[in-house]
Structure formats: C-alpha cells, structure tokens
Length: 465
Ligand SMILES: [Zn+2]
Image (cartoon, rainbow, N blue to C red):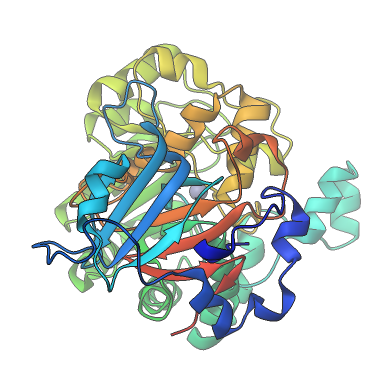
C-alpha cells in the first residue's frame, strides 16, 4: 500500500498484509488523493521550468527501463526516477535528470522499496470469447479416455467455444471479455493483443473485432487487433471452401474495415499446412495486415520458413521448431513468442525450450495466450512459469514481457520501455527486487498502473474516471 510521503511507516512492503491493510481507503477517493503528493520540496520547486512534469515517480529501489539495447536486458537503475508529462515519459534515470522538472503542481509518487517497470505488453491473446472449456480441462487432468469424454458429452478443442461466441450479442461478448481485460489491467498490462478466430463466420469474426474496438474505447488499455480467421474451419464446411471464403471475402473485408492490424493463421498438423498459411498471410499482406503465425505448437510442418519468408512480425508457440528454423526466424527479424501459459495449461509433452532461440539471437516475447484453453490474465504468472518451467532468467522474462512484447506488435517505438518520448505506460510493483516477480507467488504484485500518464489501477482496483 502506498503511503503519503510525510507518513512513511515501518510496515513491511512485500507482505500480503500490506496489500490488504487499508481496507477503508482501498476503493475510495481519499486513498487516491493520499497516493499522490502534489508538492515536492526541492531547490527547483519555485523555478518555472520550460518542461514541467505532471507526474514524477521517485526513489524506486529499482527502475527497469527495459530499453532495447540494455546489456543487462532490463536497463536497471537503482534509486530510479521517472518524469511524465502530456501522457509521455519526459525523463527517466537518476534523481538528477528528473528533479529539475518538478514544480508545485507536480504529483509525486514515492516508490521507495518498490520496483518500477514498463507496463506489460501481452502480445498474444484470444481474450474475446464466450463459454468455457473447464470440463475438457478436468477431463484431461483426470486422463479420461476419448470414449469416456464422448460418453459424458464433453466437447473439446477450439470449436467448443465457437457456439457460445456466435450466440452472444456484442454486449454480452463485451461484458464477459471486459472482466478478463480489467483483470489484465490491474495485473500490469497496458497493451494487449486480441485475436478473432472463435467465429469462423463473417458476422462473428467481425463481432469479435468490434469488441476489440469497444475494449480500447471503454477501458484504459491499448488493444491491438488481429484477424485470425485461419484458426480452423467450421465442422460443416470443407477446408478448401472455407479458405476460399477467407482469402477472397473475409480478409479483404477485414483489411478494408481497419478493424485489424495483423493477420494470423494456425500452422500445425490437422490445421493449416505451411503452404496454406502462406496463402492466407499473403492475402492479409495485400489487405494491409501484417503477418503473425501460430506454428510448431504440436508438430513441426514448416511454419517458421513461411513466417521468415513473409517477414512475419512474430512466430508463436515454437515447441517443435528445429534449430535451423529458429535460425531462419532470427535472421528474418521475426520475434519468437513462446507461450508458457498454454504449455502449463495443457501439460504439454514438449514444453518450449528458450535456449536455442536465445543462442540463435532471436528476440523473445512471452504472453498470456489468454483463451478458453488457458484462462490466464496475469503476466506476472506467465513470468513465474517462464522462469520456473522453462529456465528463463528473470531479466529475460521481464524483457520478453515488455519491450519484447512491443516488438512482437511492431510498437517498440512507442511502448515497451521507459524512455523519453515513449508513452507513459508504467507499473509499480510491491517488490523490492525485480527477481521477486518470479519468486513471490503473490495474488498480484502490482501496486499501481499508469496508462498514458494517468493512474488507472491501484492495489488491484481499477480507478474509474
Ligand atoms: Zn494463440
């Protein structure tokens, strides 16, 4: 819990007790006011500066700038300060670079004993869906036979949530999705990618993309929209016929509508072949949607080569990619996005190995892959899994969750790091050291979230305007 600067206490910073110790102010205006001090005593406070900061975060035990060229991967600054103005970061680093920007009207947050990091960029999700696959989840945990699953009438796979997604009105779909996205925001995510692909028909795919637009309009988060008509094909249609509809009708329609920035497909045995994915992604490029590709998740059938040839922004999953294919991706500048959450959720028999990706010089992103098969909204949880289950260092995982994610969305010029000129998308953790994010299995380590310079969440509660 943040304290006003004048009232520093000896309360332990990193305990759950600290998180819950101020019940009465947790959701109230009084706490929000206490959260910020409007005046800072410095020799500069009476000067009129050319460039005054609206918001300053001071004394962070660690500031993780996550700048792209940081040799330590996270750009760590001890006792870090950040200044924000006009929704942008105007200075970041030591006290000396920020103090001159403080004026009487500057709000000052004391981040003593806490870590300050860029907002998470969750670069791979299917967060817009109706329904649930909880029955399938437990059928698999209990290792029920295929026969038994059938006898009990349990549906499996992505088509399980197709019907509810089709049947939901746009408001119903928005309301269900907004609950998940709100949870993402209070867990530190300031940008989320969101794919269609649970409709596989014209109206539902457009409805999902429209929900993406509504989410960004109504919630303090950037939503990057991806058309994933090539997620599968409907039961009642041959693949060839669906592909024809996809390439000649849907992709030009979606591209022309401006409802999606990226086009994606699923390259795996039983889904689309590498060649078919190539056709889908090329159609996307023609309609002004940059390519991304699901590939190597459950088999390897040449997806990386297609992604590299088309200079896909990212290739995602990568469980089965051979080393030479990873090298092709790295050479093409395609960001590798392995997904710790889905490997955990399905008890994957071949969890991804980041070592060859790193050795080949690939930039990595990690993401929640929030979907009915992996109901995860928390990037901190994904970092825990990336480190504990896949051997990533905390620095590698934090980078992959911030600037790596930004690169996987081609947004690295505006988000993903704390550097002057970038959007002021910042989070503060109730943790003393950055490694603690993978070591403390807390409900939510995120103390506060700042989106475009505005405080949008404090102690797991969204601040409504
Ligand atoms: Zn996916």
